Length: 426
Image (cartoon, rainbow, N blue to C red; front, side):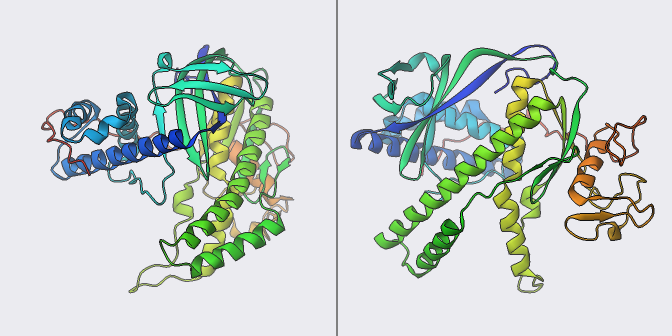
């Protein structure tokens, strides 16, 4: 987390430390209870916000926090969770509604959402190292919890987040370790364009790729999915199959996150400016099934493309790159992706025939040939304002390309909004 949104000047950087918890049955049950209460507060507060928006009014954090305190008198089970944990849930909801819109924020389903909650008060958290492999932390209403000491904490704890992934619980500490974001990159005159496709390709001709699932894991996952389709909903057998699927997909997810973190570190360390396409992954992976009145075309092919896009983790790479850029001073620029794969980097001609195949680019006008993804990465760098010629050397003038889209802003709360009614707790 970067305390200052600007990149110029030195700003304090908060770092994350994640450890695996070893909870006893009582503590695990309390964590499940805290997660269920936070989920109920989130869903109820979200419904209240939506009801106010339907009436043309606005609801924010302050009145909802006051009503939450009053609701504890009518619903004592709300007091089972720490107060500041529930308040942090309302703060997270308030931020999500302001950034994405009230009707675009999702419900937290008990079947699809993994329990999680945050302790925002770092002064109430005590962390101790018990030895080479184990540590413990004292959390409100949980007491002392043990965790694997896989790395030093390295700073003062500001907050702690407890989440469940599969059958394991994890704790993430947000620490202030004294590091700051530099005002300037160590290599200020370096820039690179990145094309996110089957492989992560740079304008310098570097390719970064990795297979996340082994062939054996892919076959096992397919068999488990077939078993899941034959299981009755709510049965113990279905729960066992879901747990096995989560074990396989969890390993794949960890490898994807590791690859994105390593690639982002390499790019941010070597370049002061990294240009990416402004990809809308959620729009690109929308279903092509259509409706009953207007059925879609090539639905199975589109479904396979969607799986390939999601498997590569394009958005995860962007998040990892922004995270790595905080400590190196790198600037991440998003550019319009339109026609970057069809434009010749040498002459600037746009023609769908230029791209002969997935890997070969041959300009129909000037005859320039290059790897298709490398050519696209060079166009992305040009669009960011760093001209590069078809031979790879820096150009003398800025290429006339599309500019990055303007920053969209969301209107603030309505000052004439009425006060909220009491929260209808589910």
